[in-house]
Length: 119
Image (cartoon, rainbow, N blue to C red):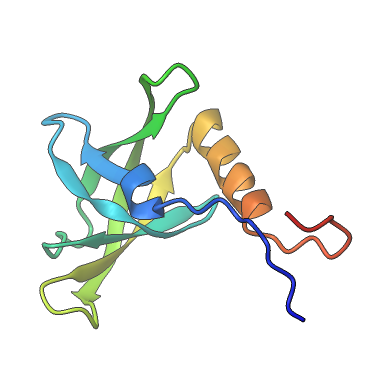
């Protein structure tokens, strides 16, 4: 008999939207993330070698968005397998502590813990 588990699901693209810090317009959402950079999934191709001022708006505990501001250089861009979407790789320029913290929180959240009790 299969065990039913209750796992809280989150729509990560909703939480991991990336905005242009200057215009506050959405640029896309994070496809993957590391301490050194990120892949942005966007409806537009990004200009390679251009530097972008970016902002993540993360929901805070009080319901108000918490901002993580950073700058990154686009290293590559290509059409995604999804029509009308583009993947672009960014290298961060001196990532702030809040960004590095987010990477660690996400890494921990998505890591399988074999000794953890079922939810």
